Length: 404
Image (cartoon, rainbow, N blue to C red):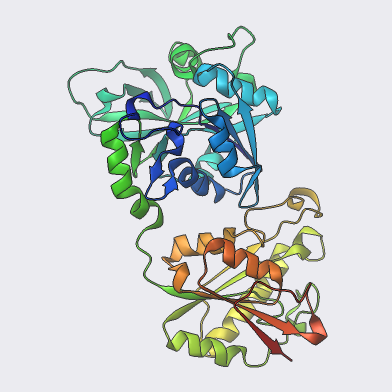
């Protein structure tokens, strides 16, 4: 899935607290707001992210470049502001997008984007709504049978209800030929045509914030770090699989051919006794190349986990990436989760409250080390095995261990 993020805002109401940067780049405890938003999007493993930019666009370009943590970043530039609708339509036209998830670059909503994508896969247009105590501050959405049937104007009296948080699933054919170059997506398309469109809605029930005014920006600075990252309190030993847990036999996928590395169970028991979780992060290009199936991988994974449990060092979790740029069919692609990209490590940290700075990774390839460094793991160890050398011996690892 492609993502389009509207990042061209001037941020006039924030000029008293942020200066010389576009609104989406407002600093949140040392990290631009837009980066926090993109890091959440990355867990969906997007094909590419399109940033709609205008005001001080070079600041955004310089920060993200053409690739951020392994995911292509494209730019739809507006010489003159096109409005939210014009910006979205230009991005679709410029990069020939058939469908995309569209977000506002100054709004954060805690939601499962993968669930949103799955539930709306057959829809031309869908909207994410959020229940709030004072819907009249934003304008309330009226719904019926899972569809939005109208939007009510802002009212002075606080009334609970559903609001539009600016997250959409859009297919290209939503944009008709009679639309002008400059228009508001909400005011010129969504609201006046709501009785025709009647979009499906998905409800988000968790945290929501719009940083558009100084008060909410200050609240974001206080809260967002903990909302997004939680309060990590555990440490983990991250392990690559082939060449670290088991001997690397080039696309191992048969249980009867699995040979465990000498000392692996003693090592993991020692780390377990020191309070580390054991987490496996493994590229599985053999799936992408058609050498074996995901089912084959899962059978071997379950066998290995059973052995670890038997040896007194159970595996907390395992993450795998079945994609490869030279793969077949749906697996032929790069991925945020494919090392040297840090996706598997970052997802593990998020799901298991891992403090990466206090954690360790052991791998036998430089891609393992680069993924760990990118994710912020505190210590990295590279295994060098002369009988099964993977890639160059040059390394950025903190330590190098020679193994048999």
